[in-house]
Amino acid sequence: MRCIALLSFLFAFCVCGFSSTKQRVIILTDMGADPDDEQSLVRLLVYANQIDIEGVVATTSCWHRNGIRPDFIDTILDAYERVQPNLSKHEDGYPTAKALRGVVKHGSPKYGMTGVGEGMDSEGSEWIIQQWEADDERPLWISVWGGPNTLAQALYKIDLTRSEDEAKRLISKLRVYTISDQDDSAMWMREEFPDLFYIVTPTDDYGKATWIAINNNHDGSDNVLVSNPWLAENIQQGHGPLGTKYPDTAWGMEGDTPAFLGLIPNGLNAPENPDWGGWGGRYELSIPDIDDFEDGGSVVVPSPETRPIWTDTSDTYTPYRASEYKRAIEKSENSYSGNAVTLWRWRDDFQNDFAARMDWCVLSFEEANHPPVPHLNHPEEITVKSGQGVTLDAYGSSDPDGDSISYLWFNYPEAGTYNGTMTTGGAENVDRFNFTAPQVDQVVTAHFILRVTDKGSLALSRYQRVIVTFEP
Picture (cartoon, rainbow, N blue to C red):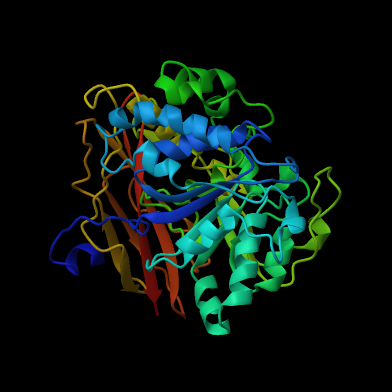
């Protein structure tokens, strides 16, 4: 077999993942409407060294129409201040609570489009514009946990006061992920700004949304990891002041967290490519079918979309399970399909990762677990000809705590353009993955995911995505 990945590249090097750039984000949150916003903010803060949090703006929503509650944000930051020194023992870059307090802003206290238009500027909308126009080439993500009308006002003002070319340039830098539509300004933005990058499940029935998979029970998933006893043991109790500010679940655990999960640099997430899939789910650029919309009891019933948006799509996934003898892991008998699958398939990993970071709030470096470090001995993108043998090689992956590590390689067919599934000629759970390139009559791509997991008390995983281009 000709091992393209080994023979074509004569040196080995460590690569850092498609999402290695730290993402900029402004959070819009209807704090006070549901405890899940408080839960999501606690999780966000333990990743505050890996995401540039440039704003946390208190807003309204369809569930919280008559005012804003920035005091909820302040209280959680007070708790973060007490654990930030200990978090910094585990990884560099955690901002001070003082720095984060400086980016907490008041959005419009009005609901939806009643807060958009002439004279409707707020501290929050002005702050969005200031950060948006900053001299920074990176895109600016707006992670919307409630109503988006503070963003709508910023867009309204940019459109009114900047030249057409400048407004177009600025809009090209925005990335929006909203947890469904929680006020009527959402549809207005998508209609008025057709070039705006927008991820959303525009459904009136939240049970159909991709993001709901973070807390719903699903066959094939370890639902214990989203249970109240697990949250009490691993997040709330015995994890310092920040854990005590993680409230009990009322309607659903962390319904807003998917709006930023995909920004965490874990080697899998690729924020600029929602169709590649990651911790926040996978989305396709399409026009949702209006026939899916019925009056499911939500306050905001969406209208037909006028252009493609990043919205729900489906994965088919067969979980792996531990095997007592011989090969350490094996595929289960059942496969699962649907838009929720695109998110819950990663839930074991991101829940363990969160729990480990909550441990960082109180434990020393030596007492806590830290994620492994995948290593590829070839680039993340390679090109091969039909029929050629390929070896993907992760020998040299390691763990900072000296833990034993496990490997898992798998093809992610929905993320590529090759209409088929690639399997290895050997075992999936070793450091190398061998396969033969298929016969193709046009250039197509296939995505392969390396998952490296340690054997710490909370098993932590990191990834590398390898994109293989097949040529005729």
